[in-house]
Every structure is written in C-alpha cells, then in structure tokens.
Image 1: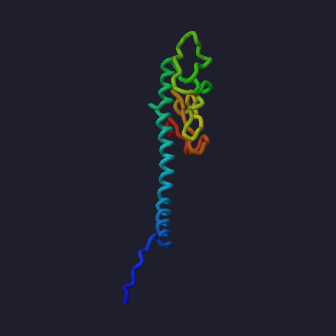
Image 2: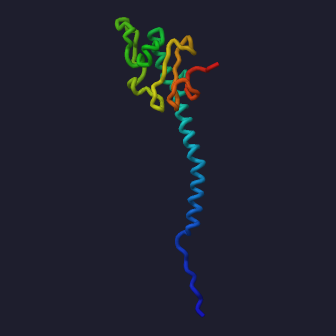
Length: 151
C-alpha cells in the first residue's frame, strides 16, 4: 500500500481568523479610551502651562504691568499684549509691546476657544483672572481651567 501523502495546510481557518479579530477588538476596547483620556489630559496641561504664573500669557501680562504700571483692564483685554491700547498715551512711550508673538486671533486654547480675562480680578483681586472654558466650551462649569484656586 502506498503511504498517503499528508497535505500541507496553507492559510488560516476561519476560527483562527475570528479569534485574532476578537483579541484585537478586546485590546482596542482598552486602548482607545486610555488614548482619548491622555489627549484630554495633555490639552489641560497645555492650558495650565499657558495661563499659570510662569506661562506665556502670564509672562506677557507681567511685562505689560512692569512697563505700564498696571495690568490691562477687562475692556482692553489680552489684545493689549499685541497692540497699544488707546487708553495709553503714545507720547509717554510706556507701552513697549507687543508682549506676545503672533496675533490676538491665534491666542486660543486647544479647543479653539478664546481665553477669558478679567482685570481687576474677582478671584485674584490684586491681579487678574485668566481662564479657559475647557473641553465643554461652556463658561462656569467644572472643567474650566483657571489661574486661581477656589476656596
């Protein structure tokens, strides 16, 4: 009798392919939320770094205060870091700006919302309040990122 030749199997069975797909789906179910959450945390960190004591906006505001003797008021807003406010006499030559690079239109948080500014501050009474409305885009909610600590 002749020995039967064993056929070599090539490729994968349907069950093997489905098992691999199931494992990949399970891994994705854990990885995607973790990656999404880390992206949100990174954006919050960027905003904190921008508005806190040594951040880019804070540095511009400190330099403005040093030159002019006060922070821009609420009406002048952060635009005073880019262009001399009309309330500052040009002849006195005290405004030495611009205090930030670029244009005011590009000064947005990672959610493409304008930073909010108030001076004199309601919470930082001797300075200014600076905040982002956060991921939800609504002012006064729990996800707002602020330069003050609420008590």
